[in-house]
Image (cartoon, rainbow over all chains, first blue to last red; front, side, top):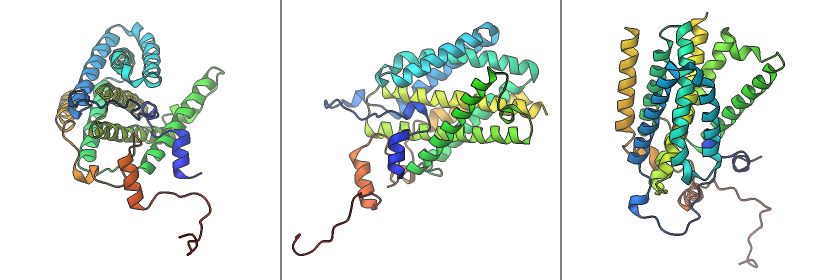
Length: 248
Length: 68
């Protein structure tokens, strides 16, 4: 299977939000004010982050909202991914708020067991975000088609492993090393954190290229949503990794 | 101390995101021939052609005087 046929078959990104074709089928030209910009995408990311923190505050104080937040957030994520990207502006803010509720509750439970772990996980997540943004903007990390294919394959592999583990848990079984705090379990978590972090580079490239190509304004919401999906995943994996390290 | 350090890290990182995120990437990043073609744009395909990395499938034919 050649590189390009593999890309066409399995999609073009590690992030599921980017596996769609965004070719502009509308032949009407887009005016300058209706085009995607870097400013707009960053501002919308800030709005989603603020909503996520607001939701987390609620989830922290009312832990009963954790599971509903997780379920509704996941449903909203799938709706945003599979619906027309032009509607992302109406679903992405709700996704951020509900996912924030889930993260707030999960962090509260983790904080009860391991005090101080929440602020460490948030700090590391944003630290990785800022350092990778610097590496991307300065050209230290240069994403290519091969890079994207590699990240996509690894992300799908991890998703499949989690799915199998989740299904097996209903039958009283599971893939032990994923959740263990042994050397192999920590190594696996480190690998997953690495893949989640590298997905951020793809998000940056998507937003940068979208702004350069002058995509429609609503793609700012879509780019910000994709960044949020990756950030939420990265935060969860860092929290898991820290919990494994602290439980040793 | 732990909370103070990580709180500073969060504030600094958010500041970087808000400032650096709005600046265009360096020319080292944007002016490459092997950039990801997110939107199947013609420009990127032209880059591929110039790069010589485009795959041509099928049996090659010999060019001779008759074919010209």
